[in-house]
Length: 400
Ligand SMILES: Nc1nc2c(ncn2[C@@H]2O[C@H](COP(=O)(O)OP(=O)(O)O)[C@@H](O)[C@H]2O)c(=O)[nH]1
Ligand SMILES: Nc1ncnc2c1ncn2[C@@H]1O[C@H](COP(=O)(O)OP(=O)(O)O)[C@@H](O)[C@H]1O
Image (cartoon, rainbow, N blue to C red):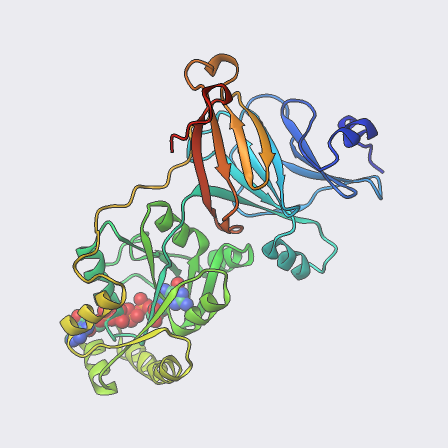
């Protein structure tokens, strides 16, 4: 039997009937939803880690939930605001500009799925970092071994280095001569990769030609964080899994002119043993059947003459010459002073920075628009819009 936290008394609950932030000690916030009070923060002293515990009034018990996703680093304090009853917005105080907006998901689809996986009775919450702006749809490229996926992707990244970024997969296969760990693949031990898959760190994974391959959630997110469009080179099973995932992508299948040409290319690459070549050719037949006839792919490209195929790839990606190839500004966070106050109206969060010692430096009201959130745990939450307006006394001038 637990004891209700002092700040969960009836008076405070009446004062904040909509589940808004209940202040306790400066390092903790509490959000009330039905019978449950989510208490965030906890360890005293500086900086404070953002632990999560739940007080259930109906049983008068403290519950320590399973906490998924990437956890935020400790901070000097935080504000918490409930959004749509399914997630809590956390604004960290004194955090770096790309680390101050976080979401603690309580009842999103991802959290519900994870609860179901654990039998339905376990409390589960999940962290997701908030990021400004949106990422362009990733591009999934599939096709049999030796068809030219890597060659086409290299050409694209060479010609448009600031537009595209490669999703670096994990694999248990051995590196080839020129391959670098962390660049071509994250070369991994099978047991390590299996543990990480179990921990929910992968968007998809598959056993291909006798080895384990997988795309980590982080591999896709880091490319989007750089303001680039992510390219995934994955097999047909992986493409199927991504189709079922919340990641919206464009799916392209590369096919060879014939099996004979495919074999010639594989052999001329000279990177596989005879046994591996035979295994890849055998798998190629099934991959071709599925790639061409399953309807899984948005586009099928025929890679006969490399230059022609590359031009068609560029066309379907809208790279027709008039495209703006200038690097996109990287979506950074926000510089928030340690002391600020937070309030909410509709889908807008008002962060008043015109208080205390920062009054002169930043006489501003910052608006965080959370009406178009995308993604979420176990990856980042994108689509945040953020702009400053003059303080109320200045007459609300927008300075986006
Ligand atoms: N499902 C999945 N397949 C992958 C991933 N990374 C690479 N692959 C696929 O694994 C297969 C073998 O890749 P690799 O060993 O590099 O050989 P290559 O395709 O002959 O160059 C190819 O079909 C890749 O598209 C991944 O993260 N997930
Ligand atoms: N259109 C093409 N014509 C001739 N050779 C090609 C063509 N596309 C790729 N190649 C060659 O075929 C081999 C396999 O290509 P690669 O890009 O490694 O395939 P994948 O990544 O699909 O396994 C490489 O030696 C590459 O230079």
